[in-house]
Image 1 (spheres, rainbow, N blue to C red):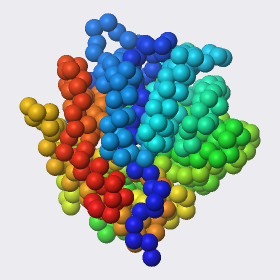
Image 2 (image 1 turned 60 degrees about the horizontal axis):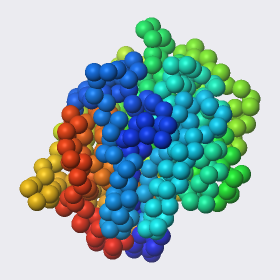
Image 3 (image 1 turned 60 degrees about the vertical axis):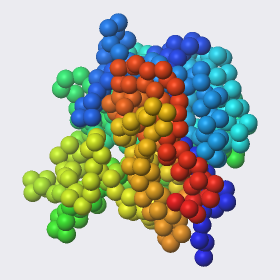
Length: 477
Ligand code: P53
């Protein structure tokens, strides 16, 4: 019986270009959807403005200036012992507007240098192609992913990246947290996932399914192209996962939990199996949702299934069935309830380590594919001491309890887990709220929610803890 993690287990950390690079106009970079988002609060998503306005503060414009400081930061990752580093390629550095026919060389060069720097330290890059940073021009000119043309723009971008970095990058993911947009009542996820800005009175749900369909087709076609460029590529999907537990043993709640999981994660079925599950087709029929879905799409989905499942795990939810909901339709804004057995973070995210083991088992039972935990972590307020240290025992507790469950899943349950990259290994701009002070890092970055600070880096207590974990290949947590 295996009693430890595989020797080649990919310990590392994860970020996304728009949340840390800054340098939003350097080297000819275009404006992305992240560049028109302001700062919210623990209870409020950030606002989307109509283009870049003169008197607004946009935290992603500077990020943590990783664009200019990446060498020092990667040296710190190497010091922690990272085997891999997950980041994304900012689409707007490669195609500033998204619809050009030729890529921008300065952008391509930046990622050549970044990946070389990783490889110099024996850190394997793990790359997401689309992580909430669609070119804004594709929103204003084409309506984002509500438009089929976006498939080809994405493929052009993907192909350029695959070709350019084929000898430097082996692990890829197509669309980050593609299923976030299932929460189409809010403006945040449709905009960040798909560049969709809804007009009053639109059928948000139908538009969401259409956009997601185009993305699923784009992803499948990208997988096929990627494999033709380098058959050794491992190309995965990326799912935002939180189990939706039945609040109690009322049978209707159990069924509601099941139906909600089906609905929230059908994206993964399409990525993995290459076709839609019947319950979604039935749902479209019942709701009168008509999808532009060609026979060519059908073929593309079948031919571009993923090699592995990347997923983020932060929290779990509990769910109840409401009597009026005769069809057991999942509605994220109505059905989720507090789970009295677990505590929540200052941002209301429910902390549930056992849920991580549940997730690893659920994915395995459903799909029997290798898994990669590409995000997990604890967003919290930190206090930097005068000597630069940060005593973040709460973060260590969170990660430790999750790692224990991850280990059980690998050792006792036998799930095939490729690696673990905790989110925001260096403090960065929050995706949901735009705050800097919602911190996840092992490395503290001196900057606040208003943009003040020296950007100086310092090591938190969790830095030394994670360094030990990696050194012992997870034997000691
Ligand atoms: P922030 C919502 C729920 C779960 C994950 O999130 C989410 C979101 C979006 O807010 O996003 C992922 O920064 C995402 C990252 C993001 C991270 O989780 O809102 O892939 O880009 O930063 C944490 O605390």
